Image (cartoon, rainbow, N blue to C red; front, side, top):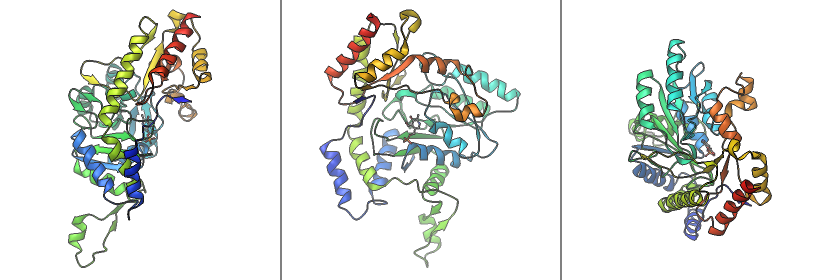
Length: 386
Ligand SMILES: Cc1ncc(COP(=O)(O)O)c(C=O)c1O
C-alpha cells in the first residue's frame, strides 16, 4: 500500500537511535536539549520546547496563553481535530473561520469580516489558531496586524510546515505569532516517531510550557540557587502533564533534521512533476504566492467535477483498489459529531465543505519512485478519459 506520506529512515538514523538505547539515558539525557537548540537555531525562534506530540504542544501552548473557561478560540474547519481539542481541553469554546478557496489556508477576508462582527457583538476571540495547511504558511504578517488591532493571541499550527518559508522567514520563527507548533509524526516532513515542538520568542511562555510538560514541576537554576542547602529541591507549581519528548525520539529528530532540506526539495520537485504531468486536466492545486515556499507535507488535488461530470467517489475507490492509500485532508471539523452537537451544521463554512467534497491528497514523500508517480498520473488520466 502506497500511503499519501511516509517517513524516510536511513542507516544513520538507526545507528543514532541505537546509541541512545545503549546509553544510560533513554529520557531526560542531552538529546532533547540538543534537538531543541537545533530547531530554535534553524527557525530563529528564541525558545523551543520539545514534547511527545504536536497535540501536546498545542495543549500546553493554550494553557501558557491562559485559555480558560468562557474564552473564545477560532481555528479553521479544514484541519485535524488537535487544532481545536487544545482549546476545548482548556474549557474554551471553539468557532471557525472558513478557508480561502484558492490557497486553502485561513481566508483573511473571512477573518476580517468575522472580527468586525464579533467586535460589535462583544464576542472577540482570545486566541486564533491558523494552520499552515499542507505545508504552506498563510499570510502571517496580515494576521499579526489584525491580532494587534483586535487584541487576540496567535498560535500557529505549523504541524505540516517545518522547512517552509514566508517572506524570508522560516516557518516557526514566531515573527508574527506568540507560539508556533511543529509535528514530528511519521507522515510529516521529519519524524521523531511521535513528537512535537512549541517555539516562541517569549521567555515567560517558554518557561511555563516547560513546567507544564513536566507534570507542573520546576527544577530551574533559579530555584536551585535560592535553596542551596537543599540540592534536591524542586517545586510543584501547577497541574501539568507528562508530555516530555524522550531521548530516543530526539536522537532520531536530530539525525532526520540533517536531511530536512533534502526532504523539502524532493517534495517540491514531486509537486512540480505532478503539475507538469497533469497539465490540461480539470484539476486545481493549492495556490502558492510568490512570497511563500511550501514544504509540501501534502499534495492535494481538487477536481473540477462540474467541468468533467465525473463521480468523486469513483476516483477515490480507484486509487484505493490500486493500492494507493489516498486520503481527504480534512473532513470539515465543524461537521464532526462533536461539533454538530454544539450546533454547527452543513453550509456554515462552504469553502471548507466544497474543498473536502472534491479533493484528494495523493502520495508525496521523499522516496516515492518515478514509476509510482507515473502510475498515479495514469490513474487520474484514465479517470478523466472514461
Ligand atoms: C494540522 C495538524 N495539527 C495537529 C496535528 C497533531 O499532530 P500530532 O500527531 O503530532 O499530535 C496534526 C497531525 O496530523 C495536524 O495535521
